[in-house]
Each structure stands twice: as C-alpha cells, then as structure tokens.
Amino acid sequence: MFIDELSPIFRELTQHPVSFLGGLFSGVLRLNLADDPVKSWLDQQKHSNSSTSNTTEANNGKASGPQRISID
Image (cartoon, rainbow, N blue to C red; front, top):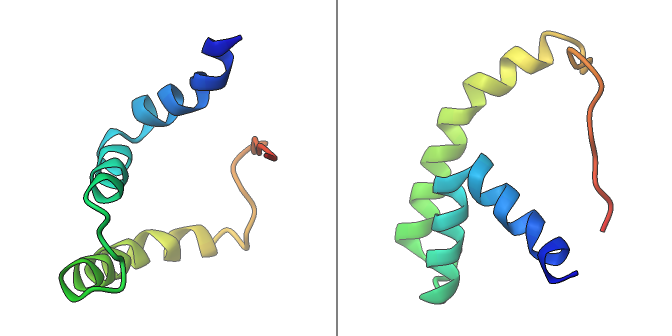
C-alpha cells in the first residue's frame, strides 16, 4: 500500500532525474520562481525548448501513437 503511493515519485525520478532533483532542490531551499536568477534561467530553458516544440507542431498536433494520461 505504501509502495503504491510512492511509485509515481520513483517513476518521475527515473524518467526525468535532473528535473525531479532540480524541483526537489528548489523546494527544499524555498526558491521563488519569480526571482531574477531562477526566472532568467527558466526563460533560457524555455527558449531552448522552443525548437523542439516546433517539430511537434509540424505533425498538426497528432502524436505518433497513443498517449497515456493520468488524472489525479
């Protein structure tokens, strides 16, 4: 029962370890995402990821296969 509740956390940790640990680190240090050093870094990440989002828009929003969603 307890393992079932923690399985989403372990799944996110194994799929996206850098993002997960970055979020955990910012939560522990109580960093505000609107502060300048964090905000400027997030803006840089958003602009670098915009090139990857253009490739998904070329498919007219259609994915290559079925998508899995989870509703909390």
